[in-house]
Length: 68
Image (cartoon, rainbow, N blue to C red; front, top):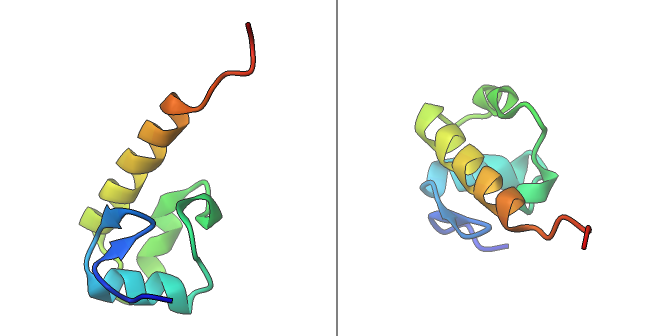
């Protein structure tokens, strides 16, 4: 898996991406509901957590509600 500065389309930096991959996460949907738990992962800081949360919230808003 690519260890560039982006994690599932979110630019959070190489150290954070590497830490998330090493912890077994591959996509935004794989992350825990409480993103603050990610702070224990080496390389994942407050900015990365904020950016991941913002993107996850944006994707959830874009999902179809399933109602007509």
